[in-house]
Image (cartoon, rainbow, N blue to C red; front, top):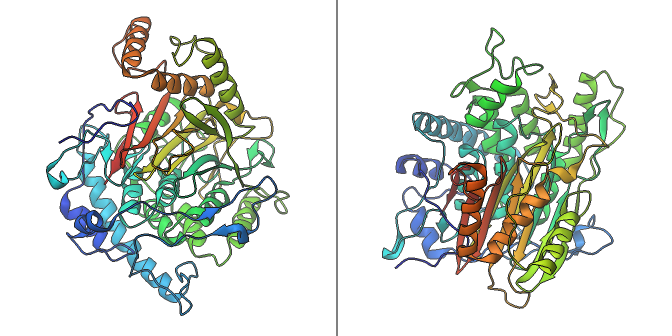
Length: 540
């Protein structure tokens, strides 16, 4: 039998590349949770169920007090996770044992990641869509999984997010781990100097929460204040499951031991040049690194390692800002990041409830466009609108994770321009953004989640997040309307758009934009993208 397709989202076959079984088993055998080699898939099949998340009751007042949060017991008990005598998780309190285990794990993961990169280097495509052997005699379309899945612009980061899911993490763990990975391997689009916005739907509580970096602030003239680490740490503190240091193992290893330049980074280096980027992304003669070249960032690895084991997140943040201020010749930082978790904006529709992020993101514009479109013509997308005339298209990075119970995390981040300000901090290895107070966050941040019915906990959930366009609200609106119109109408409009563009490539896209689609339907997780095959995905 074939599992039903989700929520009418098309899934198109794309070239698939999976790590060899010995590598998957080897990495899992050495992982934090101590999975037994060769048996983890059977264990997950036997025990996996809907993932519970920390329940955080949001109010309009404040989220600073953690006393409002109620932690749900996980449905899958992890016997290898350390606990103290009171039953509390000891993984969040680093000590000598934690540093020893993490050091050994860094060595193991380093070998596994290096082998995985060598394995994928000779492939003709970087698109990854891993599909495990069909369990119980039935098969799935590419991008359909029993438990959870992740899709991102980089194969290695999708792989790391997938491993966090398999290790017992939830979609927040996988998304945050993959975002930190992208901060290492895609410095043209994101990084620790970037701003992050996100949207998380908790299937356990039915609540959707918006993650913001707070207002764009300036560290120095023309240089944005880095806020990635405190923003992602805030999200993980309230909703993550795995210990925080576990999420930083892979990104730290990639920064320290090196990563292979992939196609998006190679294209950015070739077109944008290397001004301000040497020696990080240059050969010794000053020419940019090409596809397949190895890059390292040991200073960034030091920052990630210290962030993993800092006894207090504020101490790690203060230390990082002090290093950046010293590099810039400042007495000390005059501002601090102010990330927030807020109730998501809502719009009731006949098809369910729509959630998005508040201002200054493009969320309010998105809701206004959808209301106007549904009043005028119903759920029927217009042909591709004419492109906006802008001098610079904001560069951003997006990723999405989903599990079969309906929990979804969408993350979007940006340095504003390609490679941001091109100011590389020598003490930290961080590329600072040129996102300042006047920068338009609304041009790149517009995640969207549609929950099919507020009264049904088993209902379908859809997530959409777009990048690569200054009209992100219009692109996301069109993608949702196309979904609501159904498969037949989608095909008709795709044919119209292809005729307008004089091309048969990238069906469903109107230009250079990328739209990631994730959903939960019939107890399965689904991932896809527009254009087809643009972004690697993995699931289990």
